[in-house]
Amino acid sequence: MSNYLVLDPAKYGLNKRLKIYKNSDEHLIIEKVIKSRIIQKDAQKIIDIAKQLSLHIPQAKITLRCRNNICSKSVKLLADSNIDLEFTN
Image (cartoon, rainbow, N blue to C red; front, top):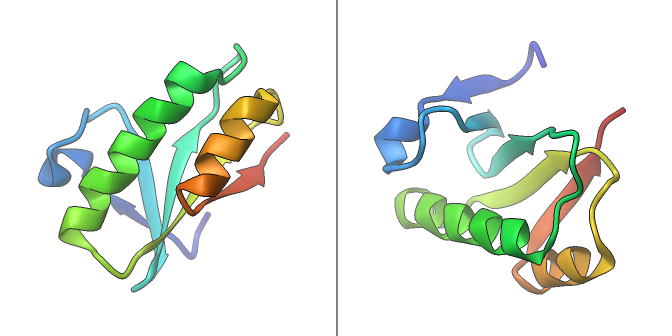
C-alpha cells in the first residue's frame, strides 16, 4: 500500500470511516474488508459511493478491495456497474 495515496472521503461527501486509495490519476480503490458477507444491499451502497466519486473524478476506474466473501449477485451487480474486484486475505 506504500504506492497509494490515501484520499479523504469527506472531500467527496462520503463517510469519513470509508477507506479510499488512489494509485494513479485514473484508478481509485474502495476498501471494504469486513467479517460478514457482502450482499446486494452492500453492493448497491458501494455503487452509490462509486457514483459519488465519479462526480469528482469522472475518468476514474474504480476497484473494490474486499475479502472473497461476496455473494454472486453482488459480483454481477458490481460488474454491471464497471466496478472491478480485488480480493485480499
